[in-house]
Image (cartoon, rainbow, N blue to C red):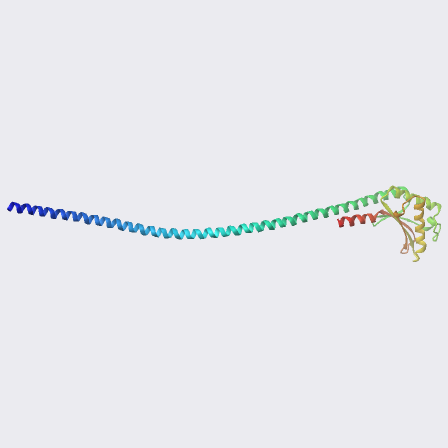
Length: 256
């Protein structure tokens, strides 16, 4: 009986000890699980915070992307407008260049015509000097060669209206100059000191008639008038390029 009790006591003690040990192990496991749970909770909280930060950044990025897209659209629109303006300006510039080139061409033609007229005057002056001699009364005025002659040598007197034989020989020299320079014209001016232009006009016409009838100078190349000589009398011959042709050329250039 005593042995039985002892054995039972030992069994009970062993059982108690085992239960205490198992309880201790369970408590340790519980604490470990609690620690793991706290760690997991902390990680979950961190993950949630990171998720919110990521969502905020994503929202910010979306806003930036929207701003960039709007800016890009504005830039593309501005580029399109700039291209249109640039093309328009280019068209205007091209038109201006074409206009300037056309104007330059017109001015070049006029300049060449003036240069040609100047060259003609030099040739005519040389021709007149060689034909009439060094004693001829010559001058250059307003693009014309001016040849002066007194009334007595041409008409025998101040009031004569018919050329003398010597004057006709002189007129032939003038005709030779005109024939050698077919692009020139001739103005014959009878000069008066009294204001009476009738006789000077007849004297100029007489010389014009001789040049046409005897020496075959085309009438359209000759103009004969009487005018106030401003205290001078006599006859002035102005040999010059055909100013009418020059005027018509300039007018046509400006029209075109």
